[in-house]
Image (cartoon, rainbow, N blue to C red; front, side, top):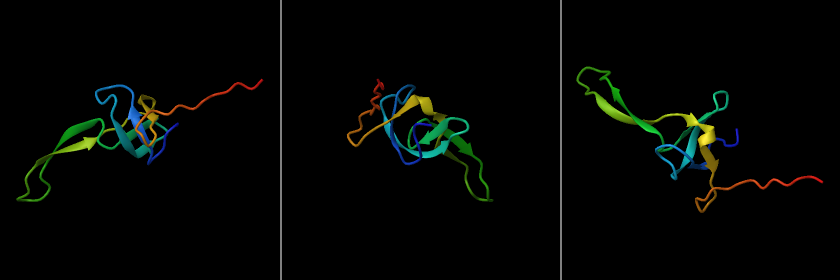
Amino acid sequence: MHVKKGDTVLILSGDDKGKTGKILKAFPREGKIVVEGINTVKKHERPRKQGQKGQVVERPMPMHASKVVKADAEKKATKKKVTKKE
């Protein structure tokens, strides 16, 4: 994968297009990553103990690594420059 845990990335497509975030987890075998504050869904949790109330929790879900690109300090996308060998 072209990104790893701790990298700051820019989202290229989807509902969160144009946003930046830090990678929390990476799943190289599936080619997916979890980005902080991006691709969140609301999960309804049941009460675990007696007297405790159920709640709605927002959790970031994995997204495909091809939807992101590394971002530099100014939050701009960075691209590797490829040169031909002659």
